[in-house]
Image (cartoon, rainbow, N blue to C red; front, side, top):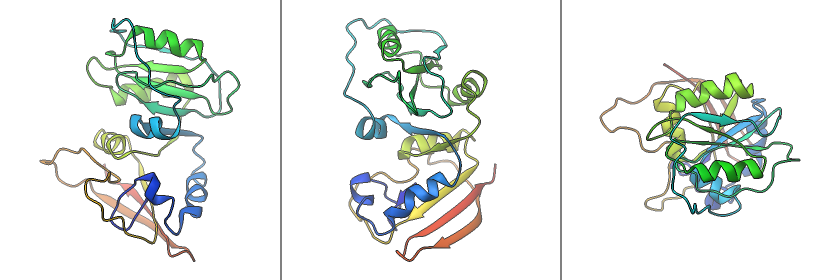
Length: 216
């Protein structure tokens, strides 16, 4: 993730920070061809609109469909199945949508017409651990980078599904109220999740790259 000094991640803000040019260099250095983001990030940066189901009947079971073979996927976590996508038939990094079993069956029929792969797991909310197992077993996803937003970052961390935290801090302060942070939505009663500092790198742009391993 790239953040301001105060830990905010709004893309419209971070793109103006000094150090933004280093972001993709740091991301690409991980050799993680699969990237995972949440619904809000997906809607802002990747999707082609909002899906409206005519039939509300849910899929109501765990299922998956591999509609594209690829070395890497653009994975989007969308609990209720709400986003529209371009056709992925010839995409170099096709989309793969993860939903809960509350998403409408009609949505998966739509994804199939767009050659978009999908996983549905979790009776009320997405079962993230099971989704990661399916990604490994059925889609050969062994390594992925979680690229936001704050709620999916927090959920993956809370479930023990994060091995490393990589933060590029741009040289600037956001300071606005109610802006998303790197990690959001963790249970307030929990103790902080411990990290171990692995490396620090400073750039001429005054950005600083911090890498931490997660102490499980």
